[in-house]
Structure formats: C-alpha cells, structure tokens
Length: 118
Image (cartoon, rainbow, N blue to C red; front, side):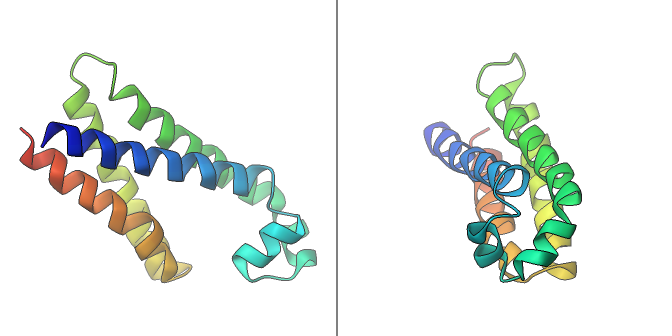
C-alpha cells in the first residue's frame, strides 16, 4: 500500500508541475487557449493571474515531492494531498467541472491510499 501511495502521489505531483508550466508559461499561447477553451486575447489579458495560479500549483508539487524525502513524510503528504483535494473541489465548483476529474479525483485517490497505508 505504501508503494501505491508513492506512485499515486507522484502522479499528482507531476500533474501539478504540468499545471504550473501550462499556467505560467503556456497560458497566452495557442496551446493554452485551446486547452482552456478561451480566446487567445482573453488568455493574454489574464496571463499575470494565471502565472500566479501556476506558482501555487508549483508549490503543491514541491510539497508532494518533499513528502518523499522528509522526516514525517506521511503527514506532509496527507497535508499537501488534502490541499490539492480542497483546491480541486473549489475549482470544480467555481471554474470548471473538469477540474474535479483532473485535479480532485487523482488527489482523492492518492489521499485515500495514503491514509490506508498507515
């Protein structure tokens, strides 16, 4: 069960690195506009806000990665996975339902397995 926790947490961390890159560097590109189904002009206007959001996703990924190496890594992992679940639920309810499946669901699975691994 501990290995499954590590694998699922690793997947969630990689997803958040991807979200960070997408929001910080690719937001105002044709790829970013296509991904978020928004006009490129709108993406350009909101790129500073998106970069800020991307930075937070980077911090979540860093916290999840830290949980692999830190003393007390289990508790750190539970904390950061819980943060991802809450952020995913909030985003899914306020921004796009897709966030529930792309962010909240994988983090919920990782959190459940992590809790069972103790």
